[in-house]
Length: 314
Image 1 (cartoon, rainbow, N blue to C red):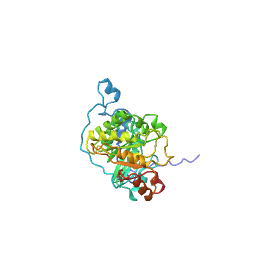
Image 2 (image 1 turned 120 degrees about the vertical axis):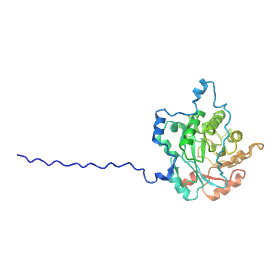
Image 3 (image 1 turned 45 degrees about the vertical axis):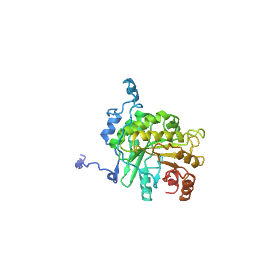
Image 4 (image 1 turned 90 degrees about the horizontal axis):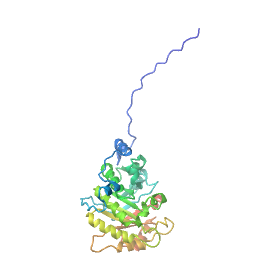
């Protein structure tokens, strides 16, 4: 007769709780899982109505009066600002630059609709490390109600010092949906987006734009003038500054940045209304480049805004 095998005694494994990964306690701007789940199931109660719902009710968010709030002022003057860098300007990279002297950092461009839909990969772009002294997030939105809902969530779950509206992204996927650089040709839409964003935020907004869609006509000086008026309507500190990348959308990154035009944008503001700081951007790869650009555009804010230069030589 064959011998029977002795049964193996299985010991009950102790139940262990899942622990947060190392370093998570040093990060903020994380949305709770239950809130993300409610966004995915379309169950989150937003204060900002959809544009279609507002139209049916006979109301319009675009015509609503500005909401004046006390906001924490963000001063960009005499600072080193690391611009949003899509796909590379992540949290570890920003921590390195902070240790190397960056005063202000900004997360990678996030799509407003993806945040509203509760996509975890998009919310990861809003994370902030405690070493980041002054931190902003850049949002690409194509509609006012979309921006309003997104800013509601940022106000509730985010930890940011400012929210930057992207009007400079040249990517076809973004522009074809009305966002990014396409907004430069839609002034009324931009006003609706800025108004809805400021209505929901307690922090200031900034606006990032290019010189225009094409090389001609240039649009930034006109839009910066409108932004100056919107900032005046919404009160002090509502729009902290305007960033101008010295290239058009069609030029992308192929031509030299036009700093003489950036100087024109800074000079074209209305003297009867408080002026906005105009921060130039483009082709700053060293301190010598920065000194040269300051000579070409002395009226602009003395904020050193770095993008690809920070990648090449952090």
